[in-house]
Length: 262
Length: 246
Figure 1: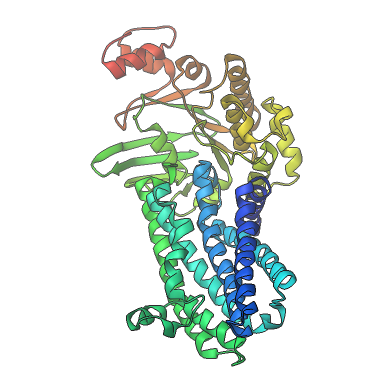
Figure 2 (figure 1 turned 180 degrees about the vertical axis):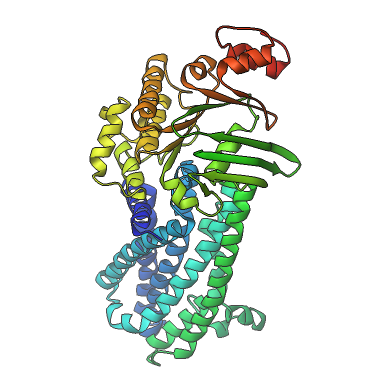
């Protein structure tokens, strides 16, 4: 892997983000809108004494963390779809750039974008609703890392599917994370789900992260159990995603899909 | 030999796009790859670039196998086609800077300016790709193709969208590169006059097979089965494709 080629991919996507209003909207607009809307909702609930303060923090914390997870997964897939829309894949892969260099560059850009969105959402939560995520951050970081790890695995798998089925399935880039939202238990504990859905939820690294986050906000401290379950599941999903992606890329080269450009 | 292709085949399901093709290219040659639409020219080029995996056969470039030395080989070659595009929101300069970084060029801005000058598009440097005409886009592709000083250049119909004057400039730039730096060029085109002028040798593909190979005059005489003093590739093309002379 060569750093200068990874750097080229990062620069390419930074140029795109600078010039494409859609990418700016994805990066900042939605995280900020989400936190504003949910923030007002929590204000309404706390004014009428319907909720304990920890529940308000749970909601706002969940909105911020889910936004981080969703943005990372979406940006990975959309970054790749951009190359298809621009018919740029042949240009890129007829150079010495390797697939792994391309993916590492894309991941770095997505991390950067997610950080911008996270900072914007956290600043608004602090300024408008007095929800300061900073004191919680040391205990949230391991869960956030698990969320990003899972988003990465999903992003890789979805990018692989786009390689195979092209832009016909591009809607997955925006919608797939939404499919997992109910079983990720973002706003409610896993115990609120019916038993059969609980079994599925326990297989989601996202659900472990949000359970862990709620434990922290409820003053129960950091839960190593939720963290390590998340790590274990992520390792499995990541290995599957990488295997799937490598296989599908080779298939794409065999079938000539890399040069189809649509 | 700079390029050696042996028994190269590619099938997509039942369709045989390239059928047992073999050829070799010497260093510094400009060679034309001709044939009607669907003859297998672009598929062959894509296999030479490692974008499509051959069903069978062997590709060796710079004495190395494409299957095992893809990165090393691609660092010393380049490709362009008017049918591929660049991210359209980025400016010409931004797009070329991305490729300058991929090839790890020293003094990338100078190198880019040289290429823009060579193809007469210096004034477009800060324009977004979306605002360029097809011909201007083609010339940006050519700037990209020359940026790493490639030893081997694969050009898929490089003058397709160019007006005659610009096409003339481009052909001269290619001939200069071949003369001054010994660049080897594999060239596809539907413009037979251009091929006659540019190419020392020609490979004719039809239905994925090599049906004729040699100098333009050799091919003309062999296919038309008569003595000619000048190459007549247009006639050859019509004879081969339609089975009769034009």
